[in-house]
Image 1 (spheres, rainbow, N blue to C red):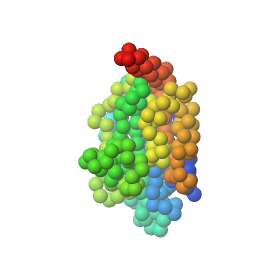
Image 2 (tube, helix red, strand yellow):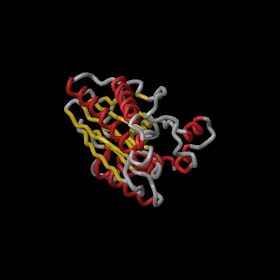
Image 3 (cartoon, rainbow, N blue to C red):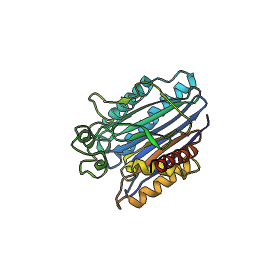
Image 4 (cartoon, rainbow, N blue to C red):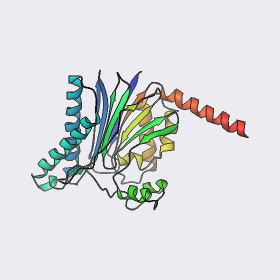
Length: 269
C-alpha cells in the first residue's frame, strides 16, 4: 500500500507560533507528532519542541532497531517528554509554567497497522470512505460535559470553556495518556489526521471529509483545510498545525462512497 505524508503549521492570529510538529518517514515507520505549547512568553514553544524532539527520537530509535510497534512505546515516549518539560521548568522564568499537549500516530507500513497516543486536546482522526472511523477523546472540560450529556458535541467548538484542559504534559502528577488498546488495521483509502485545536475548532469533521474528495494528495488536502480555517477563524485565532497520512487512494474511496450514498437515497425515493 502506498502512503502519502504531509504537514502544515501556521501562527494564525497570534504573535508567535507555539505549535511544533514532526513528520517521520522510514522504511519501517511512518509517524506524525503534533504538540501545542502553552505558558506564554516563550515557554509554550519550548515545551512543544521538547515533546516533538523526545517522541521523535524514541520513534526513530525503534525504527532503527526494527522492533515491532507497541502502544507502550508511545506511552513511554510521552512520559519521557513530560519528564523533560518538568526538568526544564526548574530554570524558572518563562519556562516555569510551560505545558504542552501531545498527539502521536505511528504506522507500520509493512504490517499495515497503526498505533497512537495523546494527551490534551490535540486530536487524531481516521477518516474511512466518507466516515469518521476513529477520533481521540479530548482531555478537556467541554469533553466531560459532552460525556455527561450536558453538552452536544456540535457545541464544543464554541463553548466558553473550550480551552480549559484537564491534562497536559509538564506536570509532576500522574500523566493520563490515552493510547490505542491494540494496533489499528489500516484499509486502502484511509486518511489519518493529527492536528492541534487551532485547526479542528474552526472546521468540522464533515467539512474535513468533504475536502478529501476534492484533493489530489495529502498536501493539497491540508492546504485546503488551512484555507478554510483561516476564512472561518476570528482575527486572533490560535496557531494551527497538522500532519496528514494518506493510505492508498482516499480521494477515489470517498468519491465512490458519495456515489453509493446518492444511489441509495435515489432508490429510496
